[in-house]
Image 1 (tube, helix red, strand yellow):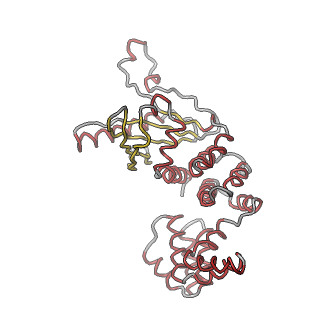
Image 2 (cartoon, one colour):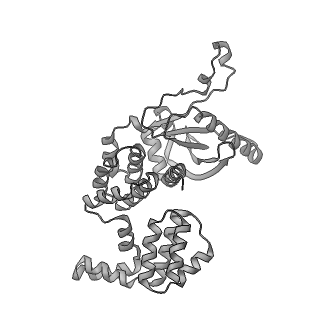
Image 3 (cartoon, rainbow, N blue to C red):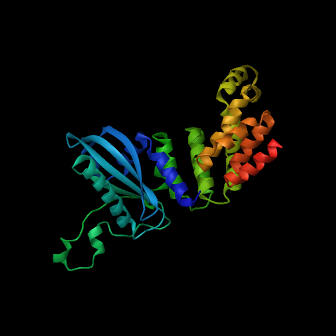
Length: 333
């Protein structure tokens, strides 16, 4: 998966949750916009469309809410950028035109679009706020130029302590913003974040680590070292230990009597072979997208727990589905 797609997927997953979008609006939209929007009434519908001109998709969230006392539908286009891209507003404009055409064809009227640029580059954002400012023409001509602005959320301007202090309000959102802000920084920057999350939301740790390891080539060993330093197992070990939920639950109950480590061991043994096979399939789908039915059937032909567990670890570490299939072939021999 390319780095661009890794960032896309991360932001997509983040704002597929209504609470995260609402808290982003609440925390970082200009007052004159959010004051007229009744955030308690927000209803979210996510959409995506591919622009053939730019060969990427933009995140389009259709929000139904009370705006200044009446129900309206708004489009929020969230475009994330890792550098000040002069083509950003043209990209947003091209996408807006597609949505306007779609609205006109389907509804006969246009819904308002609010462009949002989520910037997580190393330097500050230094581009014009208004599309009309791109035109170098005398003032009398400017009123004939296309004019629109955008909401800028420049993570380089947000203090780390602000994001860390807000983790208890919404761990997923503020940890993700911290991760986006520091994705190009020294990996040691993530140590304090992981420490904080240990006592707040361990599931978010997995979300963040998955993003960092995929976005930063060669970062896996360093992140594993940091995880050990904050007294946590590696993500792979955590998935293995906690993945077989039904069997693990029984083990945990026993663990209350005979100790957590023994309980986990019992839970691991109680997890069925089928569950283990499904975990391998889920890991591959998470990393590489859809996989063929043929590959699924081959995985289900492995009938020993040890081999399936080995395949699960391989699924987490290989760089491609093709590499996994080579190992799968060996396991079937």
